Length: 422
Ligand code: URA
Image (tube, rainbow, N blue to C red):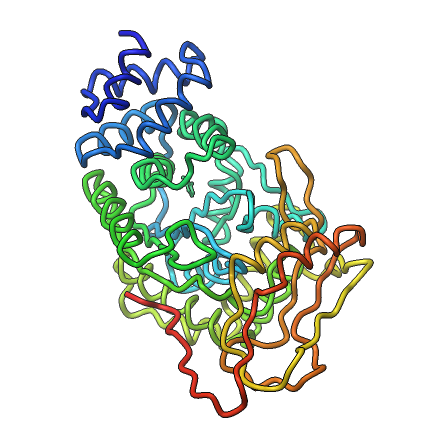
């Protein structure tokens, strides 16, 4: 087998054979196929697509590139959630302890932020002492002891995806449905969860900009999970507006703790509860009551134990930014738009995200919103506060926030779009 013939097949709109797929994934993982050759193939896949058989085989080959975990010794049913990525998407933080408090085991292997979308591990690392890197034994012990664990995927899990995802990120080949579906599902299937709820984001701040594309991604992933014996369901949820009132690492931890304490923004609470119900249903725990577990403090108890088990101090003060810049409303009226993509880019430029995988992030950087679409605002009132430790970043972030919102005359009718679309 040679890589050039594989690239040519896809370049010329052909379907890759099972043998071609198995070979190219294995050879790329071993370093026999070079990054530039894999980028050419990824671009051909982005432009010409893959059929369901090719996607299924590509996913199976990525799973086979590494180890598979096994949670069958746990006494509780396993349930996991994966979001396709958004702005202010902190849902994993309250959700994992909440679902654990209701009786499921939640093995949440999470990622770091890249580009304008935040990463769960970067957020948690703003808690003093907290460790993302656990051995498989440590991960199982936290999961068994607390009911939930949020940590980095080990190097042995779907190593083909680790290489390929980093390559796609720097070659403009992230936004391909076959590549996104196989990337997410290879990790989730290899992780060994019994059930999986997918939060497929739609809107300006998501990879999928239209409901049609999001539906196709969702049904492809549900098909892959089901074929591998993982009970998989998907929700399509709105990502045209940031979730909650914060985008940034420590800022989002603070907001998540508010949710666990029984408060927090209504959209974050609504989505957390909707996903919790789906996860509990998929895990066979239909009678559990996540709203009660949020209200009675049992989800907060799991959070505190889980953070402490990974070296973090749940009572430690979170980092705060050295410099702030307040953006005020230029006119009075009704706020009708707060663009998720623009706010995500601003948070990223303030230092909350990274431009390259190896860059550090600032724990305290990000954007705090003081109003959301539907709110009445008065000229001069704060609309958002930008946070950073490096004030020379303000000008670059302000370019992103310019045009990120609309204010309509007072009295303009406005209907807020639902958080869960389908
Ligand atoms: N998340 C992943 O893990 N992979 C993708 O390709 C996109 C989002």
